[in-house]
Length: 154
Image 1 (cartoon, rainbow, N blue to C red):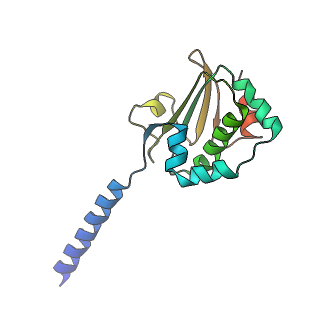
Image 2: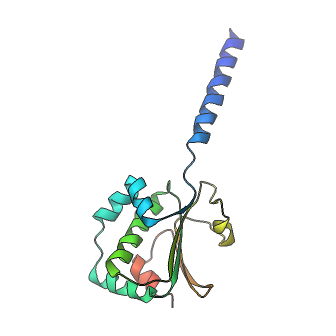
Image 3: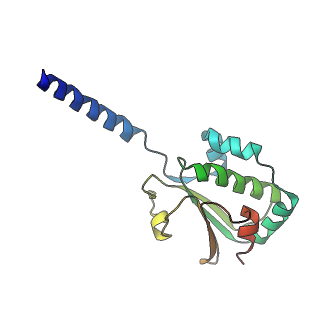
């Protein structure tokens, strides 16, 4: 009887591990449109967030800059802050040089190694740069607001 119980328990553990392996979070680059259409929590936050006029105007400081967003589709801070950033960028209609959204796994890694190159520790991390030079980063959540914090990186 003990052997049967041990075998059954082993089979359950193996089944659980194989299901868990199949449920890994998405990692890699994703467009803003795909992020919002494929992840309901991101879409919901995007819809309910209403930027202030001051925040929308502050986003103009990002004109001509590169924006790299390292986030986890599984991360509650990312589910809150990334959609807010996207809504701010949409409302401000700012002409930034590039926007790159990179999803990482629980291990804070992505298939292209972008997170590793930027020494990602916490999600989300929003990095502002120009001509390959990092100007600053917002990590996890803003001190004042996303727009206010990012507009300081000149």
